[in-house]
Length: 209
Image (cartoon, rainbow, N blue to C red; front, side):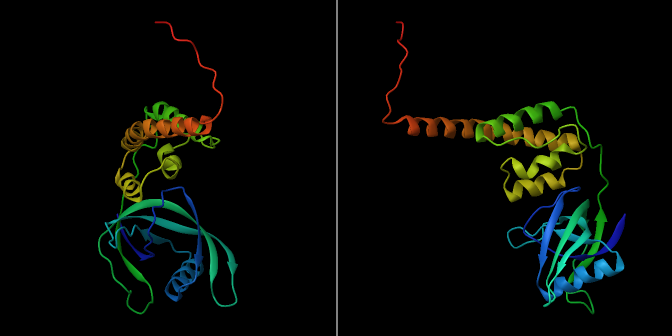
């Protein structure tokens, strides 16, 4: 399915279901957001990475106009709805200050996967190493989207995750990433422990030869 969206390129990745707070200050985006609020329209955030639009993005809905300043700036709350692929990009749209384009909406696949236990176990190990309290529910739909920003992915990796259409693929992607990251983090924690112990008296276990 294709539709036309006003577009707000950003150097970040937004996932379906994610809440995103935006401070709107540029005139072109003040116009875009004002029209979306007044006309109850959605807009798109295509990922802008390495000065390029690689093609995928997220359709967004403005949920709350939190504050409008006297000079026209706005603080708004928005939520990710679904993923799209850019068909064309027009900057600016005729008669407007902002960009827009036709997009192809990507159908969401099954939001659950049999790999969730393996992924949750690895996320838990990472958080334990980093001494971060867990605040996620592995039983929710599209669990991969809930933790994708919280496991140390680069923006390029976050974008790659955005392009994967099934939850099983996304969970396997994150499991492989964590398999690579966990040994590194574990070594770092051991190094920190050794640094902290340096200069302290140590209780050494006798070795049996």
